[in-house]
Every structure is written in structure tokens, then in C-alpha cells.
Length: 330
Ligand SMILES: [Zn+2]
Image (tube, rainbow, N blue to C red):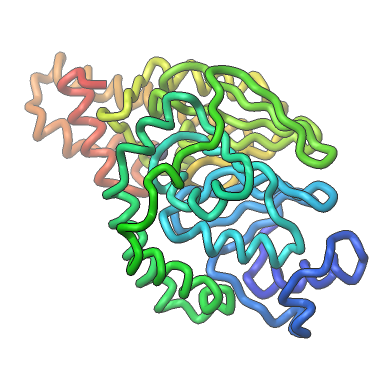
């Protein structure tokens, strides 16, 4: 289900009226139904919402008076997420990062001081090594918020301004997970079981995906770029064969009704995961044919737009991926 920003606030007000969630601060201020959000919220099933914008897709799963948050967006957006999750009348007790990239961990510092933040063990050192990425992102987040007329932006902007001004006082460790997992793990949030799985290197060397069996929702992290060209980060241990194996593992937890939340792109189902596998096969066949059978140069191969992915977003990544495959770097 798609929700507009205003409908999101209305939904929170309805839930509040029904007594299913505790009183949200904004509602106590007497403005239910009138608050607007920076992020676009999509209710995928009752109690589960995808927040789009400001980085990778975040999933909020609400159970009773508590919640799970998967991925925290770009630096500065943690303040936005915290406020907007609060509009649902809840707060996360557990945060999971699907991998270390700054558009999935940048908001961590809003949570690490108070709740558990879990990631794969290989994510931690990479998070600690990307302070400058967070610094660049928080400045652009401040610009985004300054341009936004959403009510929640007004509340978050002071926090983000303080981050920019007081950057030197912010410990890099505040972005790091508070606990790590090396392989499969499970947690309980409210009444819901939360299964975390690592299949090996794929998009990075520290991808985990998260499955909520009680709601039949799968958050893939960046193992799935849904109908968008995939980002192959050669500095982070990208492994296309491993990525395909991870996608096959994703497919194994899905049935035809599973709601699949990609790291980027629109919410989908298992067919979206199969498309990710097909994407790599198509690009590999395209490169091998053009390079080995037709003798094309790298520059010529990078200009090819294979039919089937011509509508995919992030087109500069297509060129990059063809080049990496031409050089056998991925
Ligand atoms: Zn990523």
C-alpha cells in the first residue's frame, strides 16, 4: 500500500484513537493528522512500514510498544527517522544494519547511545573507516532538511545543525554497531521473531538480510537493487558469484506472498530477486559476447545498453559494471 506523507500521520492518529499505540508526542500537542514527514512512508503490512528517501530503504516493524528498525540512511537522517518513527507512537529497541555503506549506517549515531545496533562483524571496521563519508553526507542532509517544508524537518534540523557545527566532537564509534554477528542470528522484538542471515560476500563482504517470519517480510539490504543498476563496490569485497548465491538464499526464504524490501528501488516480491540474478547473467553474457566474439574495446562495451535493463535507474552504474566485467574485476 502506498501512503502519502499526510496519510501516514492520519494513520498514526487512527492507531492512536484505537489505543493500539502509546501516545505520540505530536498528538499530545494536539495536531493529529496535520503533521507531514520528510520521508515517504509505505505501509507494507499492518505494523510494518518502509521509509523511502535519504539513502537506502529502511524498514520499521512495530510490535506492541516496541519496534525494529532496519538501516538508518545517510548521516543526519537518524534524527529524522527517530522523529518520524516517534509519530507512530513507538521507538526502536533494536536496529539492524544490512551492511556498512554510509547510506545504510549514517543515521546510526542517533541510536547507538540508547539501543542495540547490530551488524555483521566485518561491517564494524569499515564503518570506523568512513568518517569522512559521514561528514560529507551530514552537510547535504542539512541542505535537504533546510529545503523541506515537512513538519518533522523542523524538529530534526537543529540536531543535524549541531552535528555539522560540532562534528569534531562526534566520536566515529557512535556510528559503529554496538554488537556484531558472524553468521546467522535471531532476535525477538515484541512478539516478532527477527532472523538475520549472512551468506558470504555479495554486494559487500558484510551483507546480512533480515527475515520476519511472523509477517513474511524480507529486507534484502543492497543484495537487491530492484529494477535499478546494481552498485559493485570493489573496495568493499564485492563478489558477483557470491551475490548470486546470496540471492538464491533470499529466494529460498520466500514464498509467493513474501513482501521483499530491497535496499534501493520499490518494494517487490520474489520475482524482484530473480531479476537481480538475471541482471548479472545478462551483463556477463553481453560483455563476453562483445569482448570475446566481436572484439569490441572496453569503451565500446561500456556504451552497450542491453535490452531488459534499458529502463533501469542509476545508468552510470551500468557503464561502470560493464567496465568492471570487461576487466574481469568483478
Ligand atoms: Zn550498499
